Amino acid sequence: MDILFAIVLGVLFGFVLQRVGASDPEKIVGMLRLTDLHLMKAIFTGIGLSSAVLFLGLMSGIVDSGHLSVKTMYWGVAAGGLMLGFGWALSGFCPGTGVVAAGSGRKDALFFIFGGLVGAGLFTIMYRSVEGTWLLEKVWGGKTTLVLTGKSSALLEMGWSPLIAIVIGLAMMWIAKVLPERFR
Amino acid sequence: MYWDWFKGGCALGVCFLLTVIFVKPIGVSTQFVILDGIVANLFSATLVVKDDNSKSGYSSSNAYLDKSGGKYAKSVAKPLNYSFVFVLSMILGGYMGRLLQNKGSGNSIKQIPDYHRHRFGDKPAIRYSIAFAGGIIVLWGARLAGGCTSGHMMSGMMQTAVSGYVFAIAAFIIAVPTAIILYRK
Image (cartoon, rainbow over all chains, first blue to last red; front, side, top):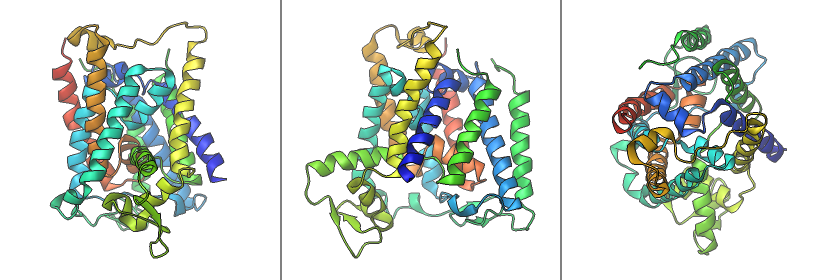
C-alpha cells in the first residue's frame, strides 16, 4: 500500500515540478537573479495554500496530525542552508528538481545527481567529525513550530494559535499575487 | 510552455497536502544517502547488518547510517520503502511532464541554459562541471541541514516549522547574491 502511494504521489510531484518549470535551471536562476519571479509566485502559492488548508483541517479535526513530521532546528540547519543556497545558485538545481530534470531529459541534471551522490557520500563518511560539534546543537527547543500542530512544541501555545498559521498561509498567497513578474 | 504561477502553485500545494495527509511530508535529499548506501553495501558485507538490539532491526558500521536506531541502515537494506520509491517515481513524473509539454509546442530542451551561455560560453563540459560541483555542495549542505528545499522549505514552512523558516532564509540570502553576481550579464 505504501509503495502504491509512493509511486502515485512521487509521479504527481515530479510531474508538477516539471510543469511549473521548477526543474528548469533557467527558471530557477531567473528567480534567484530576481529577473523572473514566476517560480517564487508559484512556491508562495503552494506553501500558503497547503498550510492554510492543512491547519484548517487540523483545527476542524478532519486531518489527523499523525502524519506530520517537524524537523529539528539546530545550527547546522542555517549553515547547511547557506551552503545549499550557494550550490543551488551555481548549478540551478536543488535535490528534488535535479532528479525531475534528469527525468525530463536534461544531461546537466545527471551530472548534478552524480555530484549529489558524491556530496551525500562525503557527508556520510565525515559524519563522525560533525557529530558532537556545535553544528548539531539544538536551538529553540529543536522540533519547534510557530503554532500548535500536535506533533511539536510551539512558540505560540494558545489553543487558537493554528489560526495564525491560516493567516500566514493566506498572507503568503497574497504576497504571491502582488509580487511583480520581475524586480530587475 | 509552463503552467502559469497560480495553477502551478495550487498543484504544488495539492502535492504537499496529499503527502502530509496520507503518508508524510515530502523529502528528497536523504535518498541520496540511501542510494550511496545501497551501492556501498554491494561491496561490503559489514556496512549494514541485521541487529535485533537496534530499534529498526538493522545497524551499520557507519555512524550516519546507524543514527536514530539504524533508520537509514534499514532503508539501505530494504530499498523498496516509501521514501526511496517516491524519489525514483519523481524521475518518471519529470519524464511524463516533459512528454505532455512537448505536445503542440514542439520546443526542445536547451541543454545549456542562456544565462550560462552568456557567462561561460557553449562548451557542455563547463556546464556539466558546474552542475557536478553544485551537486556536491548542495547535497553536503542539505545533509548538514537535515533536509533540502522540499523537506525544509516547503514541507517545513507548511507546518510553520522554525527550522523551515531558518533554512529558507539562509538558502535565499546566499543564493540571490550568488546568482546575481555569478550570472550578471
